Length: 416
Image (cartoon, rainbow, N blue to C red; front, side, top):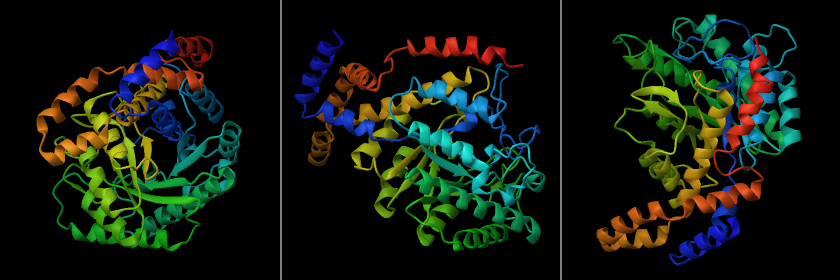
């Protein structure tokens, strides 16, 4: 029966010139970077202190991961019902130090060996982020732009250390590692000097990127933000700052779709970025009124982001990562929901007749452009998704939640 449904869908799309088998093959080649911090509310293994620096995880759902072993087990539970092969995105605070207190500026590849072993065994890639928040030297809201040279030195050395870890990941796994720098720097009220902090940030980044690592293994990215909690009036690392810095210095600009004004859309930015940049990186999230990092759902903006990636022929140029953390629901289910929705959006985009739609736009045939676009919302997309899941050996529908519920009952519920 499932085969009959896929055959029907295949023929339906073929009438529009869309090859569903090719779409499935293209989707299978996309590795999504799955953020580890959904599993423990961005806690990490460094200490038991709470979050700070504009980061907030809300909710008290029981059973969050408390160690590397528990976090890896939870990731395994998610991967078991997510189709395809992906990457795991780490923060520096997820170093496995065996109980040894290691300053962030002194972290080394050896502190991440268990993660590499985990990834190798499962055919995964790894990405990395320096952690420039939840630390005494970030307590006043400034890190790489701090007026104190000693504070800047600490954070510069930390970023260099994590770039070294990232190159190690790429070399060991044969999959390039994305190293992403995001800082919480800014001011709550109107600043007296906007230029100075940005000049200091530029100088810090120049020093960080002056240390050469093999680009075959390490991809450097920088991430902007419009504002954060406690820095509502001025963010040092603005979009304009990083857009210009990335263009001038050969690093990749990372766009988080929760980091802009609510009337801005990242989907509209992607094609412009691709005209001038070899690669673009994404953190896909769901902002509700502000950068609130809700679980990614199959909404209009997610579909538009996927459409632009596919329309631009950029599946190999756009580095897709997820970034949300919801502590009010089952954390493993949150991972699965977000990743599968990102994949569904990409498949939806792969099943559109982009050449035909583009031709109608260029001809000014906006009536057919609109009507076909609307009709395609009811094409048998779900049957193609079911085929993709079948090929990956996972459930296509909500049956996957049975496995997550069983895992919660058998493992998560016993955590105290």
